[in-house]
Length: 346
Image (cartoon, rainbow, N blue to C red; front, side, top):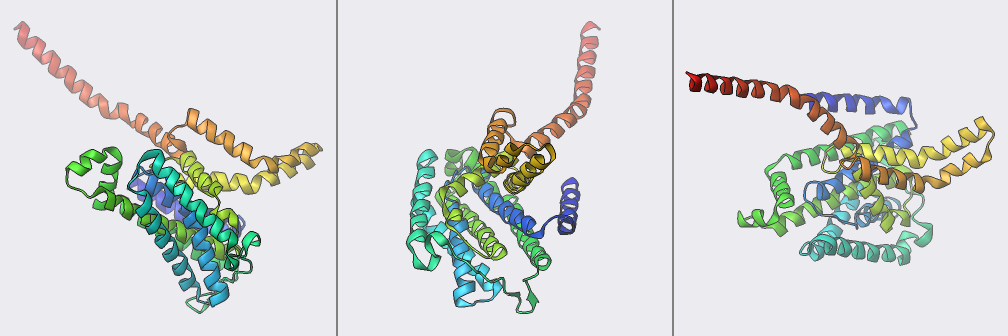
């Protein structure tokens, strides 16, 4: 019941947010939050560290952008094309990498993602180093004009909420329980008769499809797609979001995405404000040091908050409830011990 109340409060805050903050910034946060949740489904609940998720995120963005701009397809078909392309890339990549474990799996996903990066760099349809520009937003169901930021925001919010709900349902389904079993003890899952490779591949494809949905939506929001989204650094960024927020938690990646994207977008504004307030021009360089700041946050989280922001908060609440739960058990044990002692003395 507590989780439902929390989700309701989060939805209410998200609905009211565009009246206080810039809608395009909020839409970018939602896209990266969905991207991080999709990645967390793979690493947090299946135990597979992919360093090639940028291929799904950026690849879907290019396909959706090309479909909307060149083919002139409707908004819905553009997102569907991008998501399907990401799922197809995930199927091929997963089929090649899934039979390896540990660092070998990670390196294979990284290598395959970088291959896609060079394809996007050389392919004329992607615009090369200039990227894909002028992607139209279109209309929802052919009726609702998405050119208005506020209208598009609520569409993006609905997409992100649906993606998150699918992840929650997957994690709590029998399929999700098998994924957790594979993560905790893969030989045990094999001994129980589960086709572990098939479950891993399904999780990989689902994670790729959701990451692709996030990437396609981001392309529509910003109106362009560049090589940044298919570069290996984007895969590193989503790893950072997940670890900062809380690996293996449902809401942790969302918090991590909010923290990292807010830093990237607002650190420069903070530097300019400090420069004007204090009359010290050096503060203007803070915006250029965002990678240093995010790196410092990553180091602090690894050293001091290894479970991430949400993980540490959850652990604090669990430890706060634990004494109350153990006191009755302790008193019962003490009563039993006293009764035994009296019987022995008698």
